[in-house]
Length: 264
Length: 271
View (cartoon, each protein chain N blue to C red):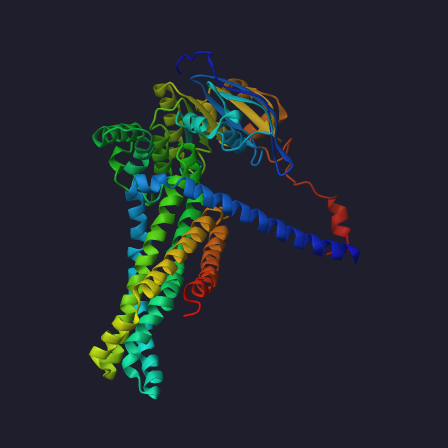
């Protein structure tokens, strides 16, 4: 009995110690990435390549999802607004929902599952096949050469993807509200123009998407670099990237929303 | 085989390495003169690859001395370590080619990273390195289009891209067909002599290895149990060497993993 209790506490202690060690490794890793980011900017073609892989190749899923989310918002928004006789405010509802919340959050979640998982899998496989060790033995720091360009590629891509998601969503809302249902075109756009504030809504949305980009990219590169160099290890790391990124985005969104829009 | 000087390139004294409180290397001593091709052999998990990683500075020893040329490896700071590695090459077990780059770009990689050579000079150098391993015609293939033997040869071309003073090979013969095995073996010898480099080969392949090396170290349980020239090893009566060279199932390296008495375990009631 005593042995069982002891083993239980030992297991808990082991889990806590392992978690603290991992946190320590993560902090050291992030500091190294920032410290060694010079290469990613001096040789910007390395970062541009990663913007292509993380950003350009995510365009299809972002644009299509944005369109459908906007169309659903148009339908649901119209359904609710018409009960109060304010269906002309559909443009405001669609645009504010997208720019403030859905654009950065949904684009962030999609970015984590499309690009974040790919970054983790790529770095994890490079580790498992000794490509990172080979680079180290060639006196090339893999954090500077492999990790930093991927990190900054993700950070730069994310706000652009979120902006495109929102733009596509507004188009989807217009398509359903104006073209299909028949809401007045002028009211749709003019109310949107009057209600959406550049600093409060657009800039805050961009800040959110930038923060989500930093979070997802950091999680993705760290999970890949810290993964067990086996097929199972890479698979677990990829799963952890998507799950951790999703939770981090939703938590950060709550904090940022509370800071940005309190009392308004 | 070329005549070689007796100037010592790699010197290891009483090198010890412990991983997770488990002793991996327990007092290794080696002296490898410049120009030699030396093999380190031993069973799986005996610490051969760890030894290469210690020489390359990827691991730090628990104690002991390790010098490569003028570099005191365990005490190097990051800049000095990278300076040393620029003069080293390492061939990994399965080549470790960068899968997102062509053969040409893989070989050009160290040159682009460490030199300011113009593209046309890099192109010529890459083609010369690839020609040396017989793969100039494969310059624009991707690693996924290469056979195991070809990938190993491309990795060899990349390893010698900056004309290293020391080349380390981690299981260069693993998984190769007999023809590729012979080709890689001969390339290791010829390139070492042509470049005036020194080579350390970690391998299990006794037959192929003894054809090309000058000297052999046998490692077992973290210590050197035998050493000598290829002829001395072939003629050796040491039980470990005999078991290894003749591929005997049982001997100093036991067939069975340590366990409780067989009879007692079968009669034991516990499941």
